[in-house]
Image 1 (cartoon, rainbow, N blue to C red):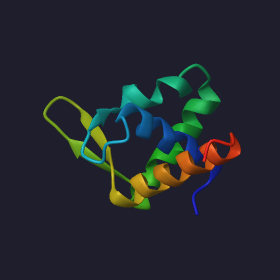
Image 2: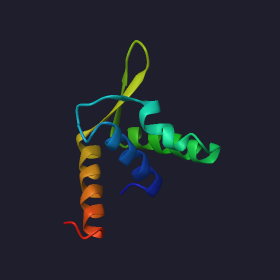
Image 3: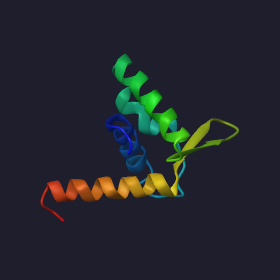
Image 4: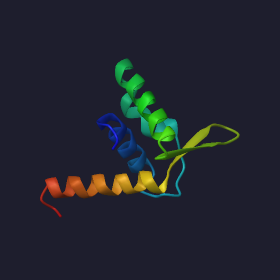
Length: 92
């Protein structure tokens, strides 16, 4: 089970990739929501490290910058979160 803040960061990655398992996105594409507040930024960085360590997100070092991709496990969590949200809205 992942924590609430990890879920927020993973949802942000899911949105930035359009829900694609094969898409790679730079950090600023999914972390910009958390940049406004130093405390939130610190929590988001910690959550991203945890998601990587737990195998939900995979970093891809490139010549310019590191990009990030959801793993199959991360994609499954995103799918579950989307289903939960739709159920809460009565749209299941």
